[in-house]
Length: 287
Picture 1 (cartoon, one colour):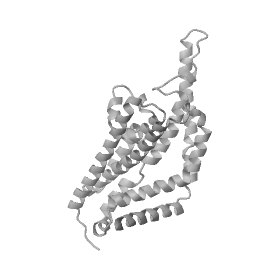
Picture 2 (picture 1 turned 90 degrees about the horizontal axis):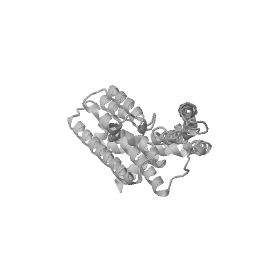
Picture 3 (picture 1 turned 180 degrees about the vertical axis):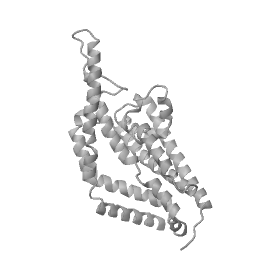
Picture 4 (picture 1 turned 45 degrees about the horizontal axis):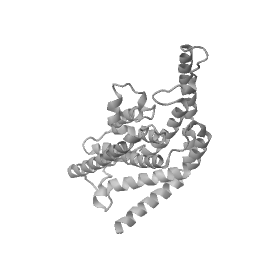
């Protein structure tokens, strides 16, 4: 019970601090949706050009406009809906400053306090991230609701069935935990190499493209798509959006959820193992 009270105090303190100094969450969230306008025009031009090409190749009276075109299994409206949903998924799974912050604490010796005080570093950082996300959505829920209401017509099939929505929520929560423990594992490399910025840059570069944040992974060439689907990155953005839109076949959904859970367990174990080994070789001097 004593440890539970400590975690509760840490969470409450972190949550209240973020509500006080991050009042820009609402405006910042609304501004982040502005690029979706560019995406709408861009994809409309792509779908429309393909539709016109198809129309030119068909007999007169057999139009194939942009609305009838499908790219990678996504129509125009579904593509816009996909981008909106990936913004939610990335808001859950992104962990700005986590890996670099851990490496900095190791490099500058701040990590010593976690070795002499009854507070676990990984648990402390996880509670802080949970508080951050709770504060973010507590303030940003209104801009999210406004944008999704204005863009409701892009969701062709409307709200998904209950079981798909529950899978969507579960995939978001596991995506958050995978994102946390994956980046925390990168930060733990700081026990062996004092600078992880280059590794972090490579991770962010690959994550941006291979998580599905830029485009649905079904648009990838056939020779690379299976390899990308094997990686855990797709569970950070693509998979939750695809679940919501019903793009994951029903007979594959349970297996995909199981694979996502397996990746989560893997990164939890990896992070804990790296931390234990790193602490064992860590040397700290001074007060």
